[in-house]
Image (cartoon, rainbow, N blue to C red; front, top):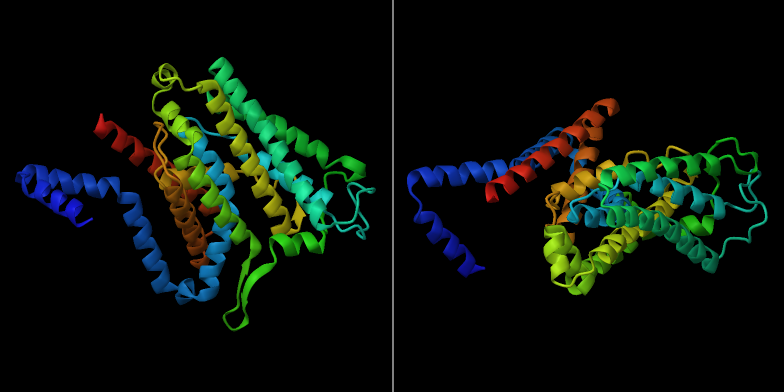
Length: 359
């Protein structure tokens, strides 16, 4: 580290005054989003002292943990210079399936009346089922992108609409009439959103899904950095033709990335069912936008072949901190959609600026 800093210092000293000025301007522009976010966070902490309380920090941690699986999935799609507009609807379908299959059997309004009582093995089976459902939708996305060279925007827009149609029909099962699916089993809630750590004096409770999210981060870090698949993913994202010439199976890599993303959306929906306990047809709406924003903030570039798991984690946390801060400042919830859109636009613009500067 000292050698790196020394080398950078010597490089800076060798620049003339004009280059030094350009160096600082580029640095400020490239990091403008982070600087503004840091200033906003400091401002919020000054205005509302509760922002730095233990309960508020725990709230940010739990919200970030619930958002991480989707961001980890969609990050791979962005590395391939694509995106995934179906993520939020796959998330919603997985949440609806989880809630329906894991309803309290004593509830008066059941989606499926003849299922077994909720047990540990049954919870695991439902998790496998919803992840499989997500993986199948992801596989369809990857197949059409890789086989027919269709743009991921078009493919995932189509599967978004198809999945939403499936969700609407799912909510009609057994005369439900589109109403919420609620009253999930206590064992399910305890296993996913029950506290693994509780500090009564600080009003702090850390749920189990924070542990699961941490485990997913470690798994995805290993997949991205230590496996042949991860290396192939970055190669395809950087230059698919060069990757193909080098012996990389571009078709298989593309399909696998999207399939893995779908499975992670399924996991996120499973967690959401336990978190909320009541799922509607609109659950998951626009969740993919938050995931995309977190990835771009975390340095996953739409130009392809650039990104890391650590950056995605940072992006998710930064985004959640901002949303919590907006609520604490009493910002109109409708205005928050405008702010989200502005963050995505700014992050993508700054990312493209850095890309053009490198060219």
